[in-house]
Length: 194
Image (tube, rainbow, N blue to C red; front, side, top):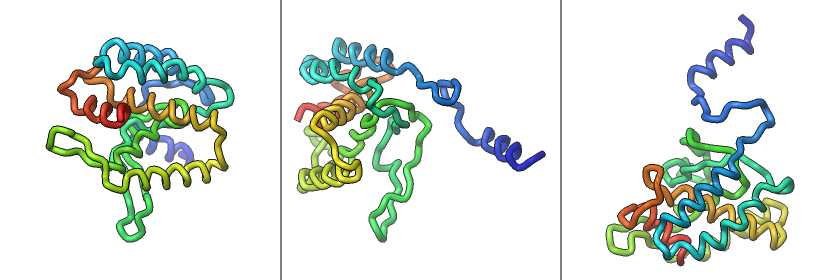
């Protein structure tokens, strides 16, 4: 057996099998899936979320145009999935990619919010750190710098993708729109309705 076959066999033993299997270069048809999910959320979530969903649903087609990249998106970017070097503060790894899917660039950026606040046991459920706005501004300054700059149109697309990602990650509970009792819904409300 040659080296390549050995690597393939070893890889098959530990790599997760993905739901979508296709030829290299084919993209799963997520537009219809995302549109359906967002419409379900619009009808099923409490009414206070409707105006935000009415704002972002019409922007979904812009995220599937030829000029907007489709990338692997981590769908569960929580603090315990980000490994940081204690000495330097630098990210050294991101784990739990099992639910990752190819989708529009920006849909994982809602994970930033997790870093800017903390869950509480009091009535407000989510509380931002005192310096969250300074940290947020710093993140976006560096983010756009490393992108090589971004036009206002691109910034609007990134924000739409971020919000859509937040809704899809936190708006469902066991396949149905979340109810008031859902911690994910309370987090979503604290983030997108502020």
